[in-house]
Structures are given as C-alpha cells and as structure tokens.
Image (cartoon, rainbow, N blue to C red; front, side):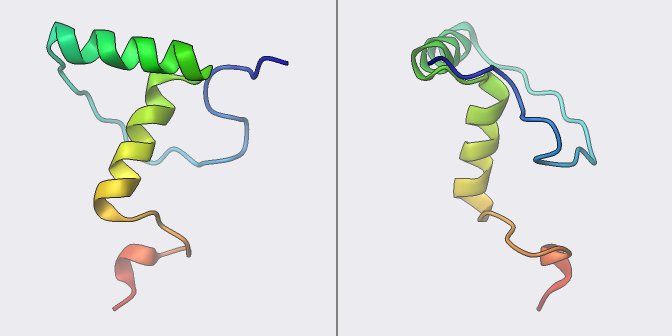
Length: 65
C-alpha cells in the first residue's frame, strides 16, 4: 500500500513560510529520496530541521527555559 504524499491533514499547524534555494544536485537528491521513500520533499526537510534544532515536543517549547 502506497502512502499519500504531503503533510497529513491536521498533523502539524503551519505558522510560518520559508523559501529555500537549492543547487541542482541537492534538489535532485531530495527528489530521489522523497520518491524512493514515498514522501514529500517538505517532510524530508522538516525531518532534517528537527534533527538540527530538536523536535518540539510540547506547546510553547521555544519559551521553556
């Protein structure tokens, strides 16, 4: 069974938009990875960001200190 592509409805609220410019090699690599895994480029990018900054686990996580 193949999964639907893109963000599942209601899973993650969208608060901000960001544009990223990629060289052709990085873009092609992301396209191949997304196709191979049945995912979207966006979900791969979110996963990478979560690995760098840590995945938010509680509401207001950026204010918790």
